[in-house]
Length: 438
Image (cartoon, rainbow, N blue to C red; front, side):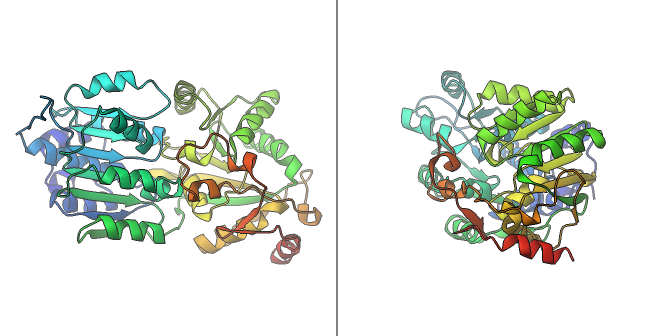
């Protein structure tokens, strides 16, 4: 099957072909006809499967097919499609895809997110905007200032809705939904299914078509996964050792906190390994600069927190490292999904200290597989190290905090998280690890 078989316009087919795409992916083959039919859609797909094109292509076709453009009471053409994303990076990536696929269409696209001046966005909204890509917080800023009108939206897309819910955006989403016309098409995309996604879909979607191109909460077969047991104080040395030993030229490293990301960058720089960090405390220009250097190959290591890294689209990224194990098991799937995309191979390495054994156990339960374990001489078999507690950052998201000024790890008493629930650190974890290695 080709893209032309899906009923897309010649202008869109031309743009897709110029990008080098000839055959639609499984999610695209199923989602594009569903969106073109006008149905609501609930779609689950892992990262790297062509999810963005599965809604942008039919959205562009639908809007360009209707040549009549209405005007608002202020004389401006209305916003016809709204795409909500959880992070700035994902919003920028989606807008880039819309512009690329719609280059031969007479449609205007705009992206808005925080961290930059709001005034240029206000000026752009005074002109014609057919498709608006936005993060919830900045969109509501415009709503409060009366600079955006959502009363004519024909299509709503919630991209990576699971992450938006995890980040505490449910209240913002509900406020935005109240501003939209009742008659519209709703498209909800997720990577990991949960009860929260089910509840959101029930209240939002009208007799939706359900598409799921992969089993829920599984990792891609193209990603080789490995665990290194290491003393917690030796993680930085082990990471530097692996980078040098295996000649890693491009590696994305995940830390649990913003402070941890900055500290690791400083330590790697002292090891003469070029590294930069992206996280919520970095300015948008700094995040854009770091990401651009990483994409073009001039930056060897990019250190990121989960929130900042959501939506990163780096072609053929070879290595992902979990410097800190995630508190939420589903985040492991999202993290390592940055590599092994679009059929390319990749490697995901996790550096696990004794404190994180329960987190690893929860991840293995989620993905339904045991991860191979190695110990490198000189970096410690930590089975006899007394566990410390792991900071719980998830509670801030659960409470619905939209814009945290500090990580929860800086504000609250640390806890160990097991299966998303708070519990005391368990000294017996090291004994369970030793037992599973036999």
